[in-house]
Image (cartoon, rainbow, N blue to C red):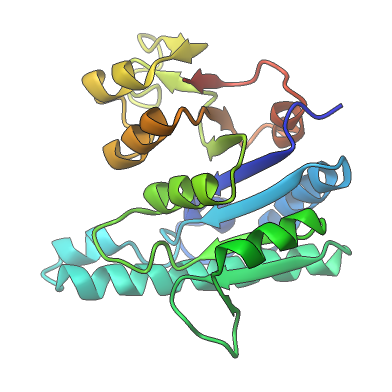
Length: 236
């Protein structure tokens, strides 16, 4: 029995690249879509926000002397490409999806309308929210939090490369990093744990929206989280 009726799944763009540094790995997207399909088949309503870092990252573009607003808009368009790839993979295995974008592009996807998004979820479709918030200077973490609050998701589930939140980077300090099973919003902010950006964490804190951080590279983890199994770290 699922522990949650409705979840917001936050994926980084790098997830879609698989083992590559850039682009979209079709096998990785196919495997990911099968996991999402399994959770949707269990009766969980799923909204998804995908980053665009495998194609273009606004902050790195700004660091290369590109105008930050232009760079962020390019990053938003990268999220649309990733969202379409994930939608296509899901549709190919029989899962109904809708890509909804914050930047209007009607020939490609629906414009994001909150009530319509909720209706899609109620009908069992996977709603994929693209183009961030449409505003520069906001990350896809913040976009995921905003969409989760708007659709009244029970939880944000954030897929990462590690199995939860650590007191320091476990990739840099594998022998010293200590994993939290649960941690407070305030501790994440005070210690700068870098799970999500501070705006997203503060929004979750102010609206009492829990976050579960887990390792996507372990097959079946999305289902385990949806079923309420103790996977990763809970931020609350």
